Amino acid sequence: MLYPKKSLGQNFLIDKNISKKIVNLTTNIFKQNIIEIGPGRGALTDEIIKKKPKKIILIEKDKILYSSLIEKYKYNQNIQILNQDALNFDYNRVLKPKSIIANLPYNISIKLIILWLKNLSQFNEIILMIQKEVAEKMKYNNIKKRNRLNVITEITSFFNIEFNVSKNVFYPKPNVNSSVIKFKPKKNISIDFEKLQKFTRDLFKNKRKKIKNILPYNNIKNIEKIYEMNILDMRAEDLSINEIIQIFNEYQ
Image (tube, rainbow, N blue to C red; front, side, top):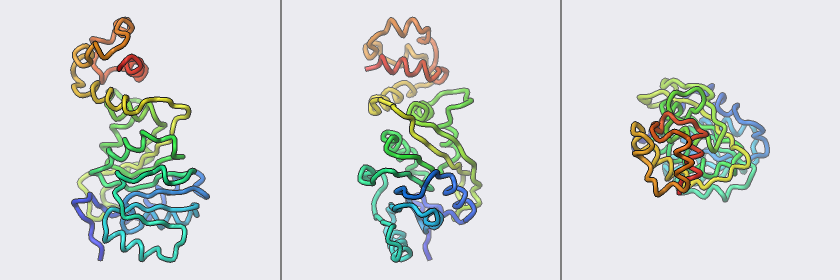
Protein backbone atom coordinates (compact mmCIF):
# COMPACT_ATOMS: atom_id res chain seq x y z
CA MET A 1 0.00 0.00 0.00
CA LEU A 2 1.40 3.42 -1.00
CA TYR A 3 0.81 6.19 1.52
CA PRO A 4 1.14 9.90 0.66
CA LYS A 5 3.85 11.84 2.50
CA LYS A 6 2.84 15.08 4.13
CA SER A 7 6.46 16.32 4.01
CA LEU A 8 6.33 16.27 0.20
CA GLY A 9 2.86 17.81 -0.01
CA GLN A 10 1.42 14.64 -1.52
CA ASN A 11 -2.31 14.27 -2.14
CA PHE A 12 -3.22 11.45 -4.51
CA LEU A 13 -5.86 12.16 -7.13
CA ILE A 14 -8.46 9.38 -6.90
CA ASP A 15 -11.12 10.52 -9.37
CA LYS A 16 -10.53 9.12 -12.87
CA ASN A 17 -12.98 11.56 -14.42
CA ILE A 18 -10.90 14.50 -13.20
CA SER A 19 -7.71 12.90 -14.56
CA LYS A 20 -9.39 12.43 -17.93
CA LYS A 21 -10.72 16.00 -17.93
CA ILE A 22 -7.24 17.42 -17.24
CA VAL A 23 -5.53 15.42 -19.98
CA ASN A 24 -8.30 16.30 -22.46
CA LEU A 25 -7.26 19.96 -22.13
CA THR A 26 -4.09 19.23 -24.08
CA THR A 27 -3.87 20.16 -27.75
CA ASN A 28 -2.20 17.84 -30.24
CA ILE A 29 -0.60 15.60 -27.58
CA PHE A 30 0.13 13.00 -30.25
CA LYS A 31 3.87 12.97 -31.15
CA GLN A 32 4.69 15.38 -28.31
CA ASN A 33 7.04 14.78 -25.40
CA ILE A 34 5.02 15.09 -22.19
CA ILE A 35 6.63 15.89 -18.84
CA GLU A 36 4.66 14.99 -15.74
CA ILE A 37 5.76 16.21 -12.32
CA GLY A 38 4.96 14.16 -9.23
CA PRO A 39 2.98 11.39 -10.96
CA GLY A 40 2.38 9.61 -7.64
CA ARG A 41 0.50 6.42 -8.41
CA GLY A 42 0.00 7.27 -12.08
CA ALA A 43 -3.56 8.64 -12.14
CA LEU A 44 -2.74 11.27 -14.77
CA THR A 45 -0.11 9.10 -16.44
CA ASP A 46 -2.67 6.41 -17.29
CA GLU A 47 -4.76 8.99 -19.13
CA ILE A 48 -1.76 10.56 -20.88
CA ILE A 49 -0.77 7.12 -22.24
CA LYS A 50 -4.17 6.82 -23.96
CA LYS A 51 -3.39 9.94 -26.02
CA LYS A 52 -0.26 8.25 -27.45
CA PRO A 53 2.38 10.95 -26.99
CA LYS A 54 5.83 10.46 -28.46
CA LYS A 55 7.38 10.08 -25.01
CA ILE A 56 6.40 10.58 -21.36
CA ILE A 57 8.97 11.77 -18.83
CA LEU A 58 7.88 11.20 -15.23
CA ILE A 59 9.74 13.13 -12.54
CA GLU A 60 9.10 11.66 -9.08
CA LYS A 61 11.11 12.74 -6.04
CA ASP A 62 9.70 10.09 -3.67
CA LYS A 63 11.89 6.97 -3.92
CA ILE A 64 9.10 4.59 -2.92
CA LEU A 65 6.70 6.00 -5.52
CA TYR A 66 9.51 6.03 -8.07
CA SER A 67 10.11 2.31 -7.52
CA SER A 68 6.38 1.64 -7.79
CA LEU A 69 6.18 3.55 -11.09
CA ILE A 70 9.17 1.64 -12.46
CA GLU A 71 7.33 -1.60 -11.74
CA LYS A 72 3.96 -0.36 -13.04
CA TYR A 73 5.29 0.87 -16.39
CA LYS A 74 8.17 -1.56 -16.94
CA TYR A 75 6.70 -2.80 -20.23
CA ASN A 76 5.98 0.68 -21.62
CA GLN A 77 8.99 1.61 -23.74
CA ASN A 78 8.13 5.28 -24.28
CA ILE A 79 7.98 6.16 -20.58
CA GLN A 80 11.11 7.46 -18.85
CA ILE A 81 10.94 7.64 -15.05
CA LEU A 82 13.38 9.83 -13.14
CA ASN A 83 13.94 9.96 -9.41
CA GLN A 84 14.68 13.69 -9.26
CA ASP A 85 13.57 16.97 -7.75
CA ALA A 86 11.55 18.87 -10.37
CA LEU A 87 13.11 22.14 -9.19
CA ASN A 88 16.56 20.92 -10.22
CA PHE A 89 15.64 19.15 -13.46
CA ASP A 90 17.12 20.45 -16.72
CA TYR A 91 14.01 20.89 -18.89
CA ASN A 92 16.17 21.78 -21.89
CA ARG A 93 17.19 18.14 -22.17
CA VAL A 94 13.66 17.22 -23.27
CA LEU A 95 13.28 17.77 -26.99
CA LYS A 96 10.54 19.90 -28.54
CA PRO A 97 7.62 19.75 -29.08
CA LYS A 98 6.92 19.33 -25.38
CA SER A 99 4.33 20.16 -22.75
CA ILE A 100 3.98 19.80 -18.99
CA ILE A 101 0.98 18.18 -17.31
CA ALA A 102 0.97 17.87 -13.53
CA ASN A 103 -0.95 17.74 -10.30
CA LEU A 104 1.54 19.83 -8.34
CA PRO A 105 2.36 19.53 -4.64
CA TYR A 106 1.10 22.74 -3.06
CA ASN A 107 4.37 23.39 -1.21
CA ILE A 108 6.45 23.94 -4.37
CA SER A 109 3.85 25.03 -6.92
CA ILE A 110 4.79 28.73 -7.08
CA LYS A 111 8.53 28.01 -7.30
CA LEU A 112 7.96 25.60 -10.18
CA ILE A 113 5.59 27.93 -12.02
CA ILE A 114 8.07 30.84 -11.83
CA LEU A 115 10.80 28.49 -13.07
CA TRP A 116 8.70 27.43 -16.07
CA LEU A 117 7.45 30.93 -16.91
CA LYS A 118 11.09 31.97 -17.21
CA ASN A 119 11.48 29.58 -20.16
CA LEU A 120 7.87 29.26 -21.27
CA SER A 121 8.69 29.63 -24.96
CA GLN A 122 10.22 26.14 -25.01
CA PHE A 123 6.85 24.54 -24.15
CA ASN A 124 3.71 24.21 -26.24
CA GLU A 125 1.58 24.50 -23.10
CA ILE A 126 1.59 23.83 -19.39
CA ILE A 127 -1.47 22.33 -17.69
CA LEU A 128 -1.46 22.14 -13.91
CA MET A 129 -3.67 21.41 -10.95
CA ILE A 130 -2.73 23.73 -8.11
CA GLN A 131 -4.21 25.35 -5.02
CA LYS A 132 -7.24 27.45 -6.00
CA GLU A 133 -6.00 30.45 -4.03
CA VAL A 134 -2.75 30.53 -6.02
CA ALA A 135 -4.64 30.17 -9.31
CA GLU A 136 -6.77 33.18 -8.41
CA LYS A 137 -3.63 35.24 -7.71
CA MET A 138 -2.35 34.55 -11.23
CA LYS A 139 -5.57 35.62 -12.92
CA TYR A 140 -5.08 38.93 -14.75
CA ASN A 141 -8.39 39.51 -16.55
CA ASN A 142 -11.24 41.32 -14.77
CA ILE A 143 -9.29 41.89 -11.57
CA LYS A 144 -9.41 44.75 -9.10
CA LYS A 145 -5.86 44.57 -7.76
CA ARG A 146 -2.47 43.75 -9.23
CA ASN A 147 0.05 41.45 -7.58
CA ARG A 148 3.48 40.09 -8.47
CA LEU A 149 2.17 36.75 -9.75
CA ASN A 150 -0.45 38.09 -12.13
CA VAL A 151 1.99 40.66 -13.55
CA ILE A 152 4.62 38.02 -14.39
CA THR A 153 1.91 35.72 -15.71
CA GLU A 154 0.37 38.33 -18.01
CA ILE A 155 3.71 39.50 -19.42
CA THR A 156 4.86 35.99 -20.30
CA SER A 157 1.76 33.93 -21.08
CA PHE A 158 -1.83 33.44 -22.08
CA PHE A 159 -3.35 32.07 -18.89
CA ASN A 160 -6.70 30.58 -18.02
CA ILE A 161 -8.37 28.88 -15.07
CA GLU A 162 -10.02 25.93 -16.82
CA PHE A 163 -12.09 24.53 -13.94
CA ASN A 164 -12.13 24.16 -10.17
CA VAL A 165 -11.71 20.87 -8.32
CA SER A 166 -13.21 19.82 -4.99
CA LYS A 167 -10.92 18.64 -2.19
CA ASN A 168 -13.04 15.45 -2.12
CA VAL A 169 -11.28 13.93 -5.15
CA PHE A 170 -7.99 13.52 -3.27
CA TYR A 171 -6.55 11.15 -0.70
CA PRO A 172 -5.85 12.40 1.85
CA LYS A 173 -8.36 15.21 1.54
CA PRO A 174 -6.48 18.56 1.58
CA ASN A 175 -7.70 21.59 3.49
CA VAL A 176 -8.22 23.63 0.33
CA ASN A 177 -9.85 23.31 -3.07
CA SER A 178 -7.87 23.20 -6.29
CA SER A 179 -7.99 24.67 -9.78
CA VAL A 180 -6.77 23.35 -13.10
CA ILE A 181 -4.94 26.05 -15.03
CA LYS A 182 -3.36 26.36 -18.45
CA PHE A 183 -0.46 28.47 -19.74
CA LYS A 184 0.43 29.03 -23.37
CA PRO A 185 3.49 31.10 -24.27
CA LYS A 186 3.18 34.54 -25.80
CA LYS A 187 5.12 34.74 -29.05
CA ASN A 188 8.14 36.97 -29.66
CA ILE A 189 8.56 37.98 -26.03
CA SER A 190 12.02 39.44 -25.43
CA ILE A 191 12.44 40.17 -21.76
CA ASP A 192 15.11 39.86 -19.10
CA PHE A 193 13.27 37.54 -16.74
CA GLU A 194 15.79 37.94 -13.90
CA LYS A 195 15.32 41.69 -14.10
CA LEU A 196 11.54 41.24 -14.19
CA GLN A 197 11.68 39.10 -11.05
CA LYS A 198 13.73 41.69 -9.18
CA PHE A 199 11.57 44.54 -10.41
CA THR A 200 8.28 42.91 -9.39
CA ARG A 201 9.77 41.97 -6.04
CA ASP A 202 10.71 45.61 -5.41
CA LEU A 203 7.43 46.94 -6.77
CA PHE A 204 5.16 44.71 -4.67
CA LYS A 205 7.14 44.29 -1.46
CA ASN A 206 5.03 47.08 0.10
CA LYS A 207 2.03 47.06 -2.19
CA ARG A 208 0.03 49.49 -0.06
CA LYS A 209 2.72 52.17 -0.30
CA LYS A 210 2.83 54.73 -3.09
CA ILE A 211 5.24 54.19 -5.98
CA LYS A 212 7.37 57.19 -4.97
CA ASN A 213 7.99 55.54 -1.58
CA ILE A 214 8.88 52.12 -3.02
CA LEU A 215 11.21 52.45 -6.00
CA PRO A 216 14.51 54.28 -5.49
CA TYR A 217 14.77 57.11 -8.01
CA ASN A 218 18.39 56.28 -8.86
CA ASN A 219 17.12 52.93 -10.24
CA ILE A 220 14.94 54.68 -12.83
CA LYS A 221 16.74 55.82 -15.99
CA ASN A 222 14.21 58.40 -17.16
CA ILE A 223 12.51 59.68 -14.04
CA GLU A 224 11.00 62.61 -16.00
CA LYS A 225 9.03 60.14 -18.11
CA ILE A 226 7.64 58.50 -14.96
CA TYR A 227 6.70 61.93 -13.60
CA GLU A 228 4.75 62.62 -16.80
CA MET A 229 2.75 59.42 -16.31
CA ASN A 230 1.29 60.84 -13.06
CA ILE A 231 1.61 57.51 -11.25
CA LEU A 232 4.10 58.26 -8.47
CA ASP A 233 1.24 58.84 -6.04
CA MET A 234 -0.44 55.57 -7.01
CA ARG A 235 0.01 52.14 -5.40
CA ALA A 236 1.51 49.25 -7.32
CA GLU A 237 -1.64 47.15 -6.97
CA ASP A 238 -3.67 49.87 -8.76
CA LEU A 239 -1.43 50.20 -11.83
CA SER A 240 -2.39 48.90 -15.26
CA ILE A 241 -0.15 46.33 -16.94
CA ASN A 242 0.94 48.98 -19.47
CA GLU A 243 1.98 51.35 -16.69
CA ILE A 244 3.93 48.58 -14.97
CA ILE A 245 5.71 47.71 -18.23
CA GLN A 246 6.59 51.35 -18.82
CA ILE A 247 8.17 51.61 -15.38
CA PHE A 248 9.94 48.31 -15.92
CA ASN A 249 11.44 49.55 -19.19
CA GLU A 250 12.97 52.51 -17.32
CA TYR A 251 14.10 50.43 -14.35
CA GLN A 252 17.71 49.35 -13.88
